[in-house]
Each structure stands twice: as C-alpha cells, then as structure tokens.
Length: 357
Image 1 (cartoon, rainbow, N blue to C red):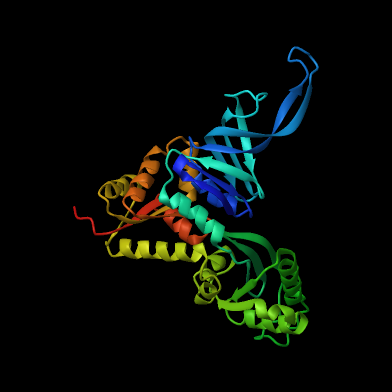
Image 2 (cartoon, rainbow, N blue to C red; image 1 turned 45 degrees about the vertical axis):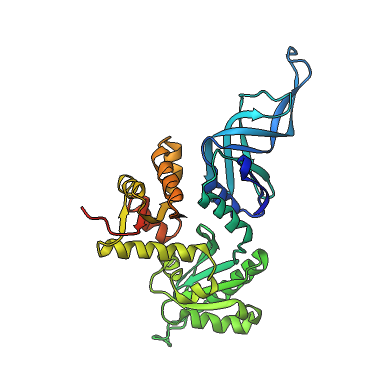
C-alpha cells in the first residue's frame, strides 16, 4: 500500500493498493458513512433516453459513494464498498446506488468526518511494512499441509497424503514417493510465489527426514528452510507452529506474532482475575472510565455487526479508546488467537488497572 496524499485536514486520504493483503487492512479502515472515491465500471446508455433500443455500454468513470455496505471476502481477494453516488460525471445520476470494487492497483480516496489514530496507523503500517513471504509445511508420517502466511492469518494452499517407511518395522518395506512429492510441491510454491522462508514442522523426526531428501534432491531450498517442532496435526499444528520461537525469529516484524502475544496476555490477566475484561457492555464501561490500555476486537465481530446494522456501540468504544490513547488491535479469526478472542464474544480489553466491584 502506498499513501499518495494525506489530507486529513480536510478529512481525506488517497491510497494506492499494491497487494491483495492491503484489502484486509482497508476493510478495517473504511466505515459506514465514509465517502470513497475511485474509478469504476458503470453501465451507460448511448443515444436518447427515449429510444427503446438504446445501446448500453460499460465505461470507466470516477465516482464517489456514501458508504452503506462493506463486503470483504478473504478467499477470493475481493473488497466491495456500496452506497449512493454523491459525485460523478454529468451523465451519472447522483443518488443512484453503485458498488466500487477495490482491487490490486486500485487508487481510492477515503474521506471521513474524523480519522481515528488507529485507522491511519493501520494505513501507515501497511505502507511501510514488507510482509515476508512465508510458506508453512506441516507434516507427519502420512499427511502434509501447505499454508501461505497472510497478514490476517494463513491460507491453506494444499494437502497431500502418503506414507513413509517406519523405522520400527524395517523389514516391512514400503515403497513411497511421499517425501519426493513434498519436495516437488515445495519447489513449485517457492518458484511461483517467490517464497522467502519455508517453515517445516512436524512431531518427532519427520522434518529431519524430509530435510535429508531436500538436501539431496533440491539443495537450493536448504537456505530458505527453518525447522520447528509441533505436537498437533493439520490446522491445529499450523496454529501451534505460529507460536514457536523459530517462527518468531523469521516473523519478528509480522503482525500475527504480536496478535498472538496480546491474546495470550489477555488470557493470563483473565486467568488471575487481573487487569482485563471482555464483552461489549463490560468493555464499554471500562472504556468510558478511560481505563482501556489495549483494546482487542475481531474482524469477524466488526463485519457481522456492520451487516446487522448494530455497529454503533462498538464504534463508540473505538472512538473513546482512541481519544484516551489506548491501543486498538483488530484480530483476524483465521488463526487460533483470533478464535480464542471470538470465544469471548469478539471484544476484550487489557486495562490500566484492575476493576473493583
């Protein structure tokens, strides 16, 4: 993401979308009742309006909509903002509804009545942070999962099943290309996605056996690989791997590691009946007292409340916490930390002091 113009004095910021991950950031920044301007395809009639068979064509126009709906779909990389048109060319009817689709390479201007600190901070973060391209490879004796690390969690790319020789039964010979297939898949992802780091994790010695095959058949991958240990399998293993110190070293600047640490701190405070609270009503109460040190809220709660037109209470909490210099972190539910927070109702706070009844 690139911030092309910062004119918050007049309420607007113009940005250029440089990666698909930027769409997730923007889905958290754009609010209902904002104005969003950008180029969009719109159907236009050619000829006189009275003609029955007037030609309808699509052409690019620059318009501004007053946002009343925001739709973000993580798995097809789509961000759509809809609302009434407030500005546009003379041949575009003001007040009609339109949807602007924001994609990679889109340039948009967001205009707000007031920019909250955390909103602009997220834009700045996305504009300066180079998110590492990391592939997770989690395996056991019979299965392997490949996942691409994203700003909001991870995206499972594919899974393979196979079987390798068991050391406990050397006389029971098994002919398998399982490790060879894994290496081929790793090479394909590294080349196609320009992967910088590969985290290979497993229980026991499976990762070490795979590394031997890599060193023999694809030595050019060795320098990209970091080994990690996990006890779980499948998606649970991916969540476990994200907490490993080996991964933290690779992702030392990544948001997801910070989110995991904050949610862990929250649950530690809750566990000892310390400086923490959760639930919309409870968090609103401590926020109004200026006691919120860190506010944690899931992207899923934000999106669902917007869809139900019930976002007003949470929006007020965000405004109050922002005005009292509290930190605001929007946590994706795609990884375990976000799921744990969602289990508390999707919103919680680490407070500056313990609440006494």
